[in-house]
Image (cartoon, rainbow, N blue to C red; front, side, top):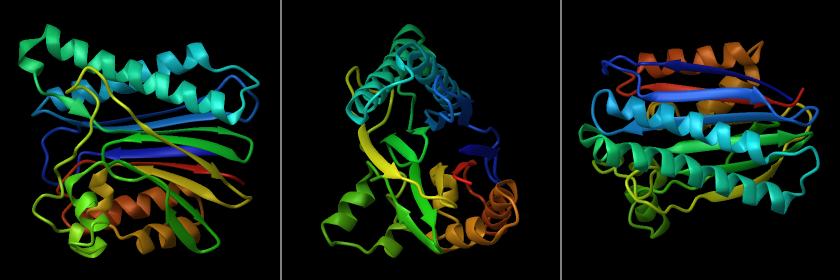
Length: 245
């Protein structure tokens, strides 16, 4: 399993409040990837996302071991998200100017062909393979609730005036729960982690096409970023692609 990532400020923001990281785990073939999209005004959103990435990885390094079953890995991810939440929450308490800052998080840990994914907020994970794309994560957002209740369609959610309102994030509350998903990746399949800056400008089918038809994974991400910019890139754009060769 390999990975590559890309991040860009976009065309309408002055600062990139997204953060991401990719690193090797303790077991052979194990990869860790995390994407965070900060919020809370200029500068402090970037503080929140950077803190969350650092705290999440630091916690994960302490709990990962070479032989973990699915349930143990699930519990480890939940624990590490909690640690990241505490880091952001505590920083905001200690620095008045950071009050209200927060961040989304989507992360994955791979081991062979298996992947465990966790998320908080509206940054997403997609499984891509065989010319098909499947969203792994569920957004914690106002519009996701409207889609699930049948009040709006998924297409309408893309341009809904409340599309940026999330119902769960790291930082605003002392306690936090994340969702965790187990994903199987076959040979030639990929897992795409991304912030909502990509989601609001590029459709799922276009993500699938870029990942499926590009010559290299890095080119896939460049295509996605270029497409987002063609459509104005109103937000920061970050994506990490994990691929099973």
